Length: 53
Image (cartoon, rainbow, N blue to C red):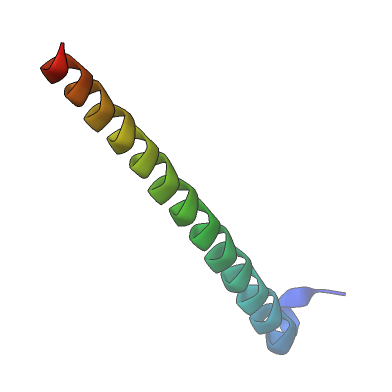
C-alpha cells in the first residue's frame, strides 16, 4: 500500500506530527523559563552578597 495515494492518511499523519511538536515546544518553553528564572535568582543573590561583603 502506498501512502501517497491516500491524502487523508497523509493529512492525519501531518496533523498528529504538528500536535506532537506543539506539545514538545510548550514543555521546552516552560523548562527554558524555569532555567532563566533560576539563573537570574542566582545572579541577583550573588550580586547582593558581593555588595554586602
